[in-house]
Length: 366
Image (tube, rainbow, N blue to C red; front, side):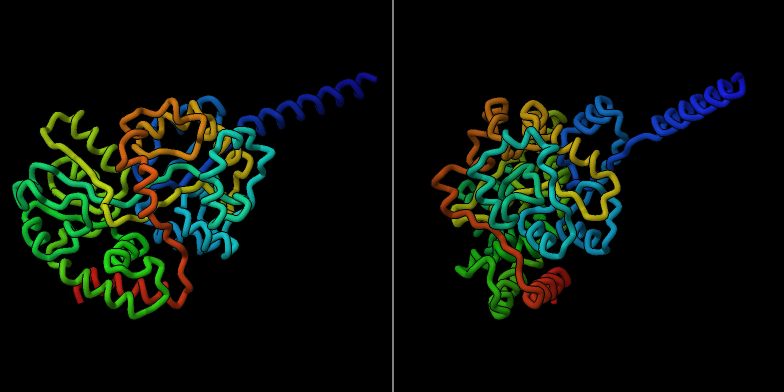
């Protein structure tokens, strides 16, 4: 009998040690998000409340994210593609479907905005919408006025697509996103062409337009312009709407005398939605759902919008978002302005190669 008791005791002890070892093995979550696109305290607070170790890495363009995803094993549990890339990647079998039974906070999302996303993600099966915004013009009012006068066309793409304007702005610095999927649709639309054109000849026209102003572009980069415009190192940038709000606030906090302003061009601009999605190769799917549900809490997402300067798709968070965002037409477009906004769609691979080749020629000025 004593041997049995001792054996049972040993077994219980062993099971206890095993349970302790399992418990000691920390849960993990690896996230790949855009640079400067989260309130820093959010991953920290989630890690503290959940006990999950969070690794948070960043990228600068949709193209760089896609290159990593298409290897088949990104190494991440959550990634944040824009809507047109989400559609392409869904078709490529990159993502796994969401388990909405683990997302009770899904109920807070705006059904009208979900309908817009339904075009890229039918049934909203793969992506959890995060922020939305436009690509527009950010500028330093004093420097642009000094270069072009009080009547500078800051509310028009003429500012950056007319060589006579760009020649005068060159001295104070002009930056553009390093992204063919962002800039070339704008150039096409400016020329009166379909921003989602599948005609190779149209891309040659866009290239001709871009090459006229290329000598005056300081650089192409999808992150550097944010700090540079806040520091006064450049005076104009084509960039993401909320980035100018965010880094304009940083300039104010720094007290460096730099003012950052932005305008949604009257001709129209691309509207985009960024979405969290779970790669098929994700190792920590339960943890990914846990974080997504946390993010869908209106009390969590509202401060993120206030920090990054973008409206979000969570309808129940809007009352907690500053009026500086909700009432600024450059951040939350008015119903009238929405009529001139357009969604950038995925292109057939053949045309995507044309666009990529054209972009390479523009950057090398050839």
